[in-house]
Image (cartoon, rainbow, N blue to C red; front, side, top):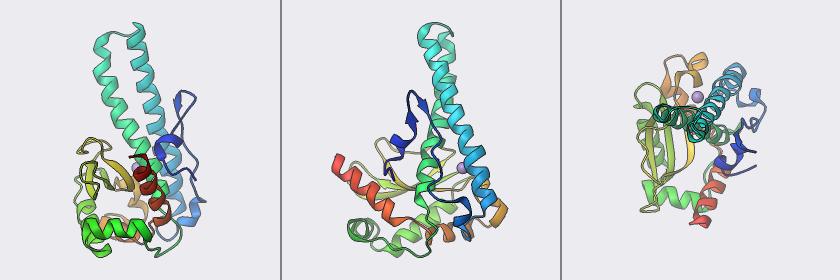
Length: 213
Ligand code: MN3
């Protein structure tokens, strides 16, 4: 599997919807098949289409086919839809049908260094993700200044991110991600997500970032 969602998300001049890395029914009991299929085939696909449309509008501004006044709106739509596309690529790769996988090696060391313990990571991730107002994400990634792992709550797909932050794990807390199964119990969904994290691929993403820098 490609460990860098940003490279699996664009091909031949267009953003593309990658296939799910597992059979959608396999994520039971974390998520039901209907939720996964709707989420991937409708919601994620719509962000891909929206990112391509916004990028095309920006090309038309460059070429003089659209007035310069169209650029700010197209840029905002690109940020929203491209943020959604990249985070959804990461989301699918953040989960595994396996239950109770544990972080190992360098990733376990980084979590311990950054949060004191795996339990410390879980405590902060749960609290931050639960508190995201409205639609958004809980994201774990690398702080480019300190090299420590940090957790941020992101509103929508692109608000409240620091420059240079490199996400390696993402939990979607838009209601479309969990409402069919968990209804208003976001905390129950987050706890289930925490026990189905694909730590092996998260480790590969961290390794890829560390080797690039
Ligand atoms: Mn979503």
